[in-house]
Image (cartoon, rainbow, N blue to C red; front, side, top):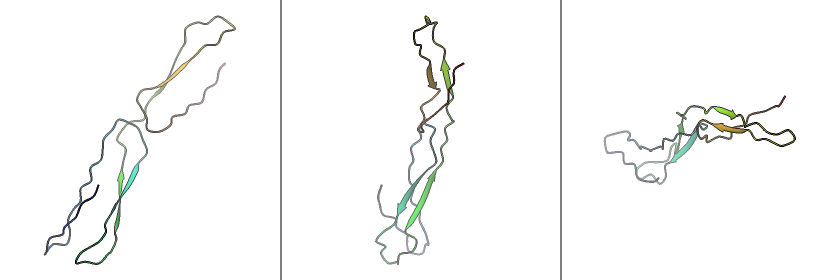
Length: 97
């Protein structure tokens, strides 16, 4: 994204709107930078702003399905699933008894 911010004569500020994308992935808080450069009729002060995007999606649920009966001596497969896609790696420990 790029553009020009203009502060009109007689005013002390203006705004720059930055769009963010909503998704359905659980993810960490994200940050981004907005940098100013090449001021005209002013000198450089703080030239970088940091934006923070907080996640608004719930943490997915992890579940396991039970396989059908297997003849002893043969392997069987359990399927581990999430209730929704995650933007983060999901790990879960398992044991058998």
